[in-house]
Image 1 (tube, rainbow, N blue to C red):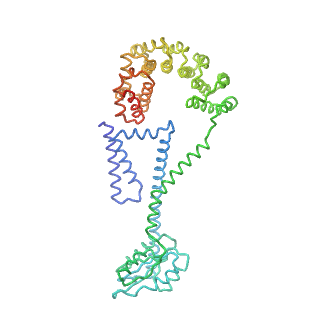
Image 2: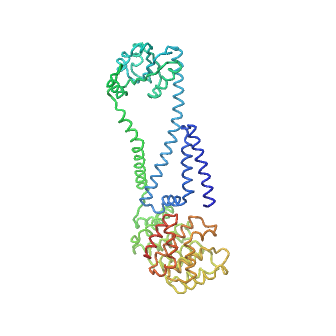
Image 3: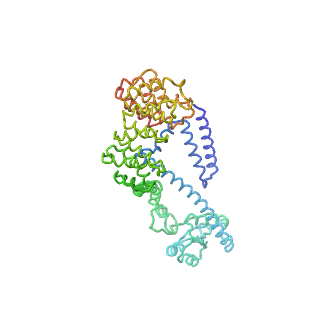
Amino acid sequence: MSTIQLIGIGFALCFIVIGASALRKERTDAFYPPASLFTGVLLLVVAVFPSTAGVLNEMLAIGKFTGSRLIALLIIVVLVLWIFIMVIAGRERKLNRQFDRLIRNEVVDRFLLTSGGEFKGSVLCLVPALNEAENLKSVLGRFPKEVNGVPVHVLVVDDGSTDRTAEVVKSMDCALAKVPVNRGGGSALRTGFDIAILSKAAAIITIDAMGCQRNIAEKITSLSGDYVLTVKANQNSESSRIYALFYSFFLIPLMMVVFGILFYLLFSVLTDEPTDVNQLLIKLETGSMRDKANASYRINKLFTDYSDQYDESYRSRIIRIHNMSKSEFNIDNTLRLHIIMIMGNSKDTTFGINLIEELSSEDEEFRIKAIEALGKLRYAPSADLVQTFLNTDNSFLEKLAAAGALGNMDNEVAINNLVKLINSWPANWNESDGPELRWEATMALIKLGYSDSLTNEIIINLLDRNYYNKYQQLDENKINFLLLKILHILDSIDNINLLKPFQNMIYQLSENDFNLEIKNFSKKLYNRFK
């Protein structure tokens, strides 16, 4: 177990202990106890099983917005909303309890000042009531004055009634505790309990003026009980409880998911952009600089994702727009860069001449994009020019682009230069040329069908996560990118014999890698050996 894992376990245990301690102190009004426990458990799982972090990372990787990732996002949205509701509900409950205590204290104090301790040593029948004027007439008249010599008193807690409930109670000569605002049956009962305790009542009996104790009354009568005061057949407590469970644990989460889907669909409609290439080209020709940049980006994406979107009728217009983008009046390089990328993604080799002209551009950014575009076009006539960018006089990024582009061009001179490049490392390399250049050149040779002991050794190293540990400048995202890139390159090779030196490493990735995408793709690639 690594040091980072041990640190993670330590932090997780701290969160769990803090959360458990808070719950033991019955800090149910605070949100942090469950949040602390949840955080601690999550950290513990990730620390002990690091692969879970990879699964979560894959769920959140929305570079390609698939259905499964939409579901993952909706689940996350529901969880976030649920946590938000918990926080708000916790705060609301805390404020509600404080307000309830304030109201109860005021009602109790007023009652005791006016009534004294008349309930001492008696049986107190506590009746919470809300707009029960009609029911109370029959309920209050059936209470006995005493039971086995013990006096019986009735206390009605009027929970903010708006009808004649208070008048009925006074007319029946029963004690009345008037609550100014409706606080619910539970609050009314708590108010009555406070009065009973402070008045030193010997026993307390609660009676529901609405008849919620129907089932209890029926049992009493079936057992030949002495007293049944009144019942009202207007409630079914079991159905209300089932509805509450259904509402809390099914209906609300379902509504959140449905709302999330509707929001996504609405957002998609509102942000929908035209997908017709002809309309987008019109924007490129006549629109503002912002419209042009947006349209060029969308065309580029369409050509990348859908190869059938390009039509030869667009050729002359794209060339004209490209020439326009090179105008001295154009101060924004974005459009020109996008047009170069559009040419490459179009797969139309006619653009090769225009892209070769960009190789002599004074701006390095244009040269790099032109090299990449020529590689995408697989424009073999440009191979001799592109391989010149491998010279030491050029920048690292130009060399990197050239190595990648040459991997798409079947040219003997290019192969010789790539082989020379990887064999000269690191003795004849500039200090600024990092190992990525050697890796890119090796991957280019593999794509071209070239294989020897050195290239095989480099590829095996690139398939080993431990190999990257000595390169501190590489983070996990970069490593995952390199692994996926080399796996895709290997998958594009038809000759299975060229893949055999890497069979064992591919198997290890398919079985043990924590990144789900890398693991699944490795399994697919390994199946080719069967």
